[in-house]
Length: 115
Image (tube, rainbow, N blue to C red; front, side, top):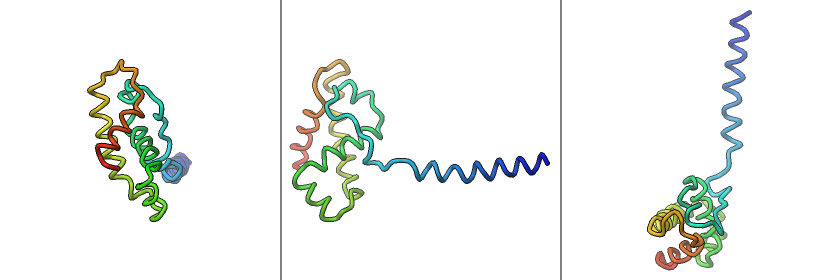
């Protein structure tokens, strides 16, 4: 009887893991750093930064057209990664206590990256 319970518990656990993974959001979902201060950006998770960068990128006219044309936001991940790196460098130079809004840094980075 003990073995049956263990087998059942293990089977349930193995079935539950894929359900949790499939319920996870995509890399471009859940970014909430628009309008945040630099210190908030510096303390945010990489996942949040990447999703926020995706949101910034998809409102850029050149890239927005590309995203809708391909209907694949996955194609924008390299650009989002590059934007996060640029904003990270700028935010580090600003410092944790800066009252600069991170959107300003992102806009500067978008100009530097010529998007």
